[in-house]
Length: 119
Image 1 (cartoon, rainbow, N blue to C red):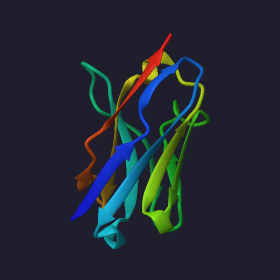
Image 2: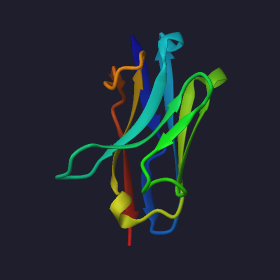
Image 3: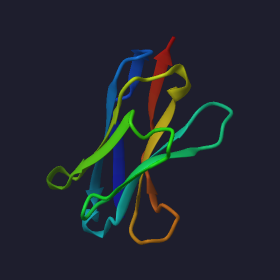
């Protein structure tokens, strides 16, 4: 089992920045990829970014590339999402997730952290 705990959400004005963290514990050696997803009220959950735990290869949706940066600190078993130039449409609950294989499905999810961007 892998446990994931997000932190760093909050209220920020448009144009501001936030850094989200996701601390992993448990069987962290089994992690293959970790990712960030978000879900706004009334909308489907969407992929934001992902990072290979070994090697650090990153993946983004085109709309996030340039504003969002995913990174990880293997020694701390922590993943980050640096979000800059935030827009009101970035308002959502942000979830971190982990998977232990190349399968598309993520096996473990955090409880989420709320990000609210005011205009």
